[in-house]
Length: 223
Image (cartoon, rainbow, N blue to C red):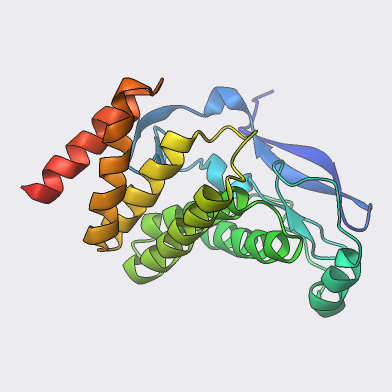
């Protein structure tokens, strides 16, 4: 029997506690060829994109979340989510194999739910960044830039509030992301300022690759 790249995972909704199925991709089918300068992974197999399956969409109430979301709901938030999401939700499943457009829809739902739930800025930034990557795959430059800007702004919020503490994102990486996303959307002034901040960290940073990448981008912009 041939093993397919896809398998179904049982998920419990953080919001309504109902169970539903979501598709994931077996790790042995995921091979990254390279990364873009904003860390978008380029996969060897263009037909299998793990990015499409990061967001779990509850088919019952519409609440959409990732593994990064906390289980905690501040008082009153469940009611807000019910009012804004669940009452308008037409039950439908994103549990099967997803198209790129499906992926974009699930990320937008994730951004909406994460924002209502007051998840960390760094989490929302990651969702917006991945939405931009999917638009890039579809060669939709306008929407790609729109979501790159949302991601940049949320990374800026995360940097100023330091809500990245305790996550996999370091301060150096946050600063690099603000710089690189600013460069990509044409905000040269902010890009230059933040690339300089990354380069200033070269004596203390434990991420020399990020410092090198910042230097390369900075040279490109000056060239």
